[in-house]
Image (cartoon, rainbow, N blue to C red; front, side, top):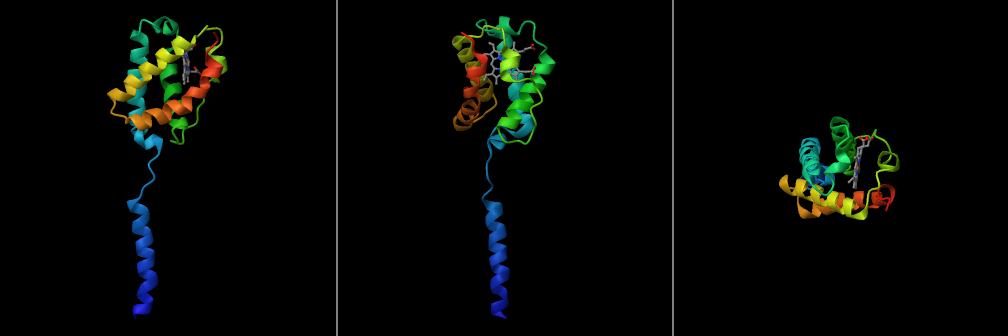
Length: 140
Ligand code: HEM
């Protein structure tokens, strides 16, 4: 009898083991889709009211920017979304974006993540994914 119980118990331990050690993705740490939407809303509000860079966004379509940023952050954080916007090179071409502009935008994004209770570790993981994009965005 006891010999039959061994495989059953092994299967049970494996199942419980998997459930008790969930893999925490960046997407989860950002609060999944709802969290990302909240972060992007605060991010856009911050961009529009930051005197260093607000002028860049004066002509932008806020609804398009909102939906493309949500897609992009969701895709970059492993949430399984597909980014359907233009490439970073295309969408920022001719804007004369400087390193200072880029750094200011990163500060506004950090404030938005902070406001939404994202841990510093998770903030850094998202920034690490976005940082290489500066090559296609900064022009001077
Ligand atoms: C890591 C940094 C950045 C990321 C991830 C990012 C991401 C994006 C995305 C996803 C879009 C939408 C593209 C589309 O419409 O298909 C966009 C558009 C735009 N970005 Fe950025 N961006 C970054 C840096 C910046 C900076 C530094 C500025 C200026 C200070 C800027 C200004 C704009 C503007 C004005 C638009 C709207 C263009 C339009 O509506 O015609 N971006 N960005």
